[in-house]
Image (cartoon, rainbow, N blue to C red; front, side):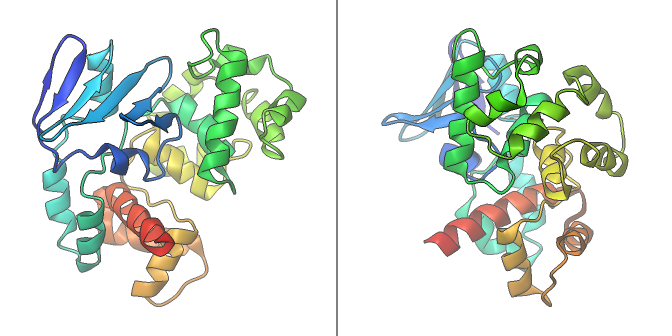
Length: 273
């Protein structure tokens, strides 16, 4: 994708490969806010302001190198979309969400965020994560560190709004460290999934989300209500989400994660509208 890097901003020159609304509103991330000017994103301890102009996007940040990686700007989504379009069911979803890019998110932040996301809505997920940031991080903005979260008891997580997930958060912080999570990156996808499912608060769907958004494993297909509805509208209906996921991975292979995002974003937006 065409982009340039300046001292304090990145200029995205190809708007067919990058749409900030598509990227942030497709369900893969929660640490962002929409503003009158555009969007602000704040992964880990970083911050960027993304503004759309007539012929480009500008990502204003003190750390351009980080956000080149975060937005995965060196990957050609044109090629990915061309391959996916060989499957007829992808035509409308790709047309609708043409500017989606899968972010390269911090593994630990992704784990905590998607444990909180289980049976939850985006507004509430963002509220809980904001509560954690403002109550734990020194600058009130950064995602809390492992050590900061480790000092918290179950009741604290409840006061942050996490409900029954408070126990999951308390226990998972005693099962792993960021270093342990990072070591999992060496494992094949199937073995890594089992490791994740063994953690408190991580079921099959959450595990697949962590695989896709944290570990950038594109050979997975997270299935929730929206994907199940999509699947059952195109194929013989199934109730078991595990079977749906396996069937879709068979169809899309190493591009499954990309297909999932286009289909999820389209299905959720289309049905809602």
